[in-house]
Image (cartoon, rainbow, N blue to C red; front, side):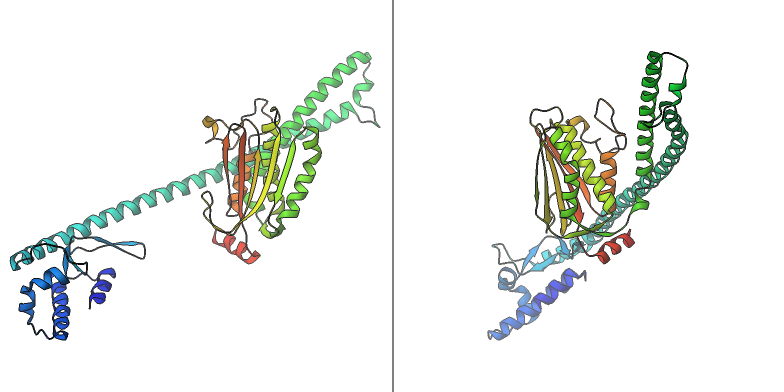
Length: 388
């Protein structure tokens, strides 16, 4: 009988105080009958044993069932071990019943108001997210369009510069000018500088166009993570040696993920390039790459069954004042303004496109960027793609 009452409470079947007492009385009388004590309900109700040994009155509570709050707007009889207090009179019982009856709608209304407030806040957050996403899509589309038009205007400059400068096997138009060799060399230096700056501008517009079309490049191919990381590192080995960078790697996962290999390579390359820059002007030039399998979620990634790729460097660290900005498009801390400030923004966007993420920790002398990407069969990856 007690279990029945508790189940009724948990499932939200609210009972009046009197009904709950009747349930307890009935159970108490039956228990006494088994012991040879025959009691009427009224006798049981006046029994001190019933109130002190069998039931305890507790305050209105909030019960939790299946992670949902359920307010019990009634006073509940519970099988808690007896407390030392005076038995309640019938008058007190009647008073508690009246209090319970009046308290029930108050608690219910309070809960509904709280629930409405939470729901309203969630709706506002969802609306703000949708508006921000639509704004971002529009800005990316515009940026891609502008970059395309600017690139079309810049391309002929490189072509004409090449014609003026010539090649190793063919003289340029500068060589045909009727001026001294000294003047020709001055012209050549200026045109070469113009050509280099123009190619830099073309690179920037290319990055912007690439950033604008990240989503359109999304695809799922099987990637053997360890061999591809070894290939990426190998392609940078000469540069590491040239810059006297000590590089170490620990690759502890032999499985696959499903992603776009070109985008995966771009993310890892961006993180390695950033680490190279970070140690460029330091005495200690250490970079390490670690690949691990994440079976369970950790403090920085909410899902398990994922690869965890960490790239650490011994650079001077990231200043606190810029930590919140480093993933913003076009933000860069490089004084020479090399690059467009799109590396980290592009990398995190690609990672999140595949249900992954990039996080970082930084302190003077050590910065670690960690890339998370989920592991699974191709059908799982395609299913995630369809869900989005």
